Image (tube, rainbow, N blue to C red; front, top):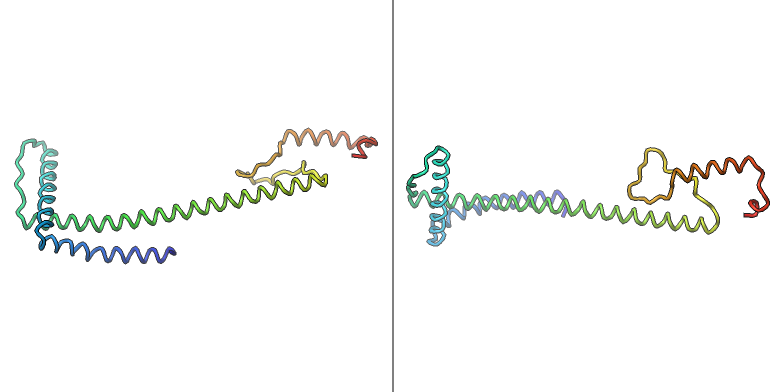
Length: 181
């Protein structure tokens, strides 16, 4: 699914979630079990809220008056409907986050595969060049590039030693044995 389609679907689900939340409120007034659940839930929320407020003010022993049934039904249904809307929105955000991480992971894996293929091609070319006696000892990575994943067997010390031995040998005429090799 493309990014735009996902965003439109997300907006559609959020828009549909609001009437569903209102339907939850209406069901709380009509069905006995759901009404009792809302009342119990709202009373416990009210009791906890009042106790926390009073403990912040320094009052420890208080008696909380219960809410009347209509107010408890309204508060419980409102909380449940808002929780539903919030959970829908949160799940959409989590899904979109998961999808983008998965996409980035797939891109990293594809890039790593491409690098591995290129490395194997380089090794293949090196072996073929070795078969026809062409040496790549003087190859150096261009300045400004710092390969992180490519394995280069290019040691600066070895190159410096080889360069100095080549310059010494180039000033002397080659032996017959060196000319044959």
